[in-house]
Image 1 (cartoon, rainbow, N blue to C red):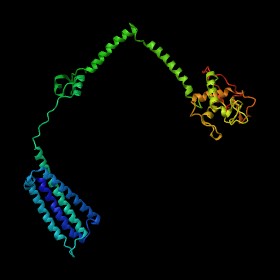
Image 2 (image 1 turned 60 degrees about the vertical axis):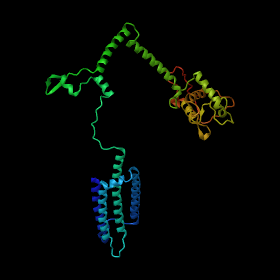
Image 3 (image 1 turned 90 degrees about the horizontal axis):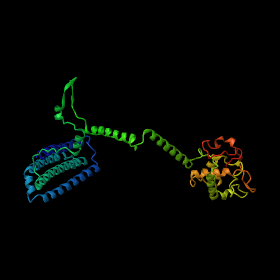
Length: 389
């Protein structure tokens, strides 16, 4: 009821004041630019509000019994509507006084203020309708305001109960029962019990000590520290051996080493026969008509030694027609192929291709010497004739 009366009383003087200010602003500087866009916007806003008003009126007719909502208007709503009507009459009279121009015509600025007043009126009507619709809804659903009943507090949750069992914490209102009598500098002590979780953990360590004593020193089903150390050391050696066995799969042009191990050389020979014979010949020595150079002499186009051989095979020589094989061969296969090529040193046939490139000697590339002494499978290579294109 207060909103129905106060709001129209607050808005109506604004409408009248806006209308009264129009005449003075026409003569002076206008408060805003009343162009066609602004006027059309106000018209559109008014149309939208009218649509809402008509829709709410239909809803109210549907919800209320015949003549029921009109009775509401005669009651609280009727007084609000009367106040709105009086306010609008006052505003219209102010408009009538303000809009009398010199030539009797209404300017765009005056039209804009008129539309502002209309929109304010429609807005007030919307508020009144919404208030009446709220009253009708409550009446239809029978949801009259009831006294708010205090919410009954539920008992402790399962989490609270678990924490209580784990900690056995005393409630605040009961702490006076466990308060000890001594005091130090105003600080007093509570005689709390040990938490159950801590007690059971302590009891568990005592039980485990008996199990460990019997298992290690009596029944011998738990290994002692010395036996565990020996077993772990043996396992570590086995892991290192397995890791070293996989290094062949992880080699690159910087870590590759040469070996004369039969299994590695034979594997490289099979790869050479499958991929390399079309360009280098079956015996890798080439011929006058072969595309690739001779791989059995001491002259190399792209450097000799196992690292250069590995690099040339892996990266290829695209400008000379040799493709990169690292996408088709694994690093271990490229290493085996390199070792096989190096094992062919000086084994070229009588029809071998003439030397190409430069003479390669191992002294010129000490990094490509034999493998470390720890590798018992490697053998020294001829330091004069080892080469690779």
